[in-house]
Amino acid sequence: MLPRKHKHLVKPLLVRSGPEGLYPEPLIWMEGKDMEGFNACFSYGFVKKPGSCHPVEGAVMHPYDEVLVFAGIDLENFRNLGGEVSIELGEEREEYVFTDPTVVCIPKGLVHGPVKYRRVDRPFVHYTISLAPQYQATVIPPAELGPVTKGTKYQHLVKPLIDPERMRNNYERGRIGSGMGYESVIDEYGVMRPRGRMGPGNADSLVWLYGDDLEGFELNFTWGHYSQCGKWHRGGEVHSHPEEEILIFVGFDPDNLEYLGAEVEQGMGYEGERHIVNVPSVYICPKGFPHLPVITRWVDKPYGFIVCCLSPDHDSPWVEVKTEE
Image 1 (cartoon, rainbow, N blue to C red):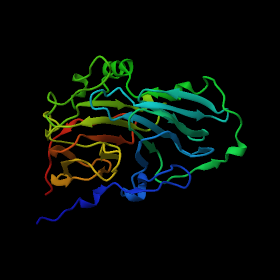
Image 2: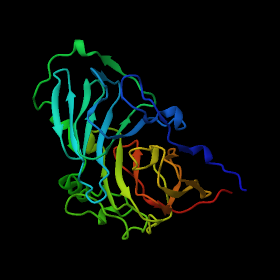
Image 3: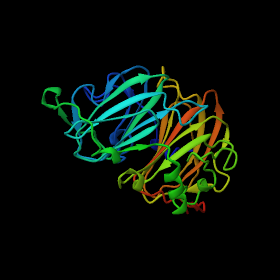
Image 4: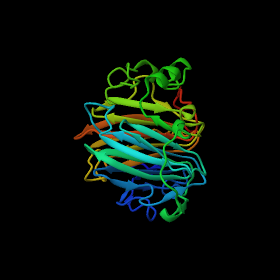
């Protein structure tokens, strides 16, 4: 067997308890130390019943920017969240309520929480991306908080995950796909439908948000549903980015966070090493690291995929494959 030079850049996602008092149940929780020093933290879990989290009681504040994402796993309707959620923001404890897939931007130093699941019609996903390699928080106990209020001061921080106007604006500015072709597959609802046209294994449904969509955060990320086998991109073989990136594969079984339901192969490095995963996993791509193609080998159950790139833009044109001398 050939040496596996890049094996350390492919990791299974770890299911464990989060920081004390943050979440009531175990979830996928990854920090920089779990991802070769990647400069962010990531969590992923399912919402299956009413309750609260982030934190379970009181409020928290972080010394870094963060996004809280709430997304559906309804394969027939990508725009269906599956419940009703509220979040309190600021020292004023302004409460915001939503029933559609949503991303909440939390600038560093903003008091926030708890998140409350007021109604759960069907399981849905909650994941976070924190722009620091280690979780840190100042906890504000319930006794030190004032009453919950209504207002609009922080309304701009609560954004629809799926927004046709935002997607059109990004398309007109030439941002979507960054040379990969995703700009050609946007429907009237602002959802990208790349499977087939871009490649048989690509997403059934996909959204992509950039820094300008996220209060200027040094971040762009995706959320997508995938269900078919095959190569993801017809247009090229390998690309790289000037920023760090992780590629996250997650399952849709609310009762088993360690189940992916598919097997995926990805090329890593100029050598094109093929690394295969069939459990929830992350591929870690340092700055300038060549990666792809992605090929879905088999699918027993649809799964999710998240790009997390530490830049407000996603510079990723196709490049020529190089060989080491």
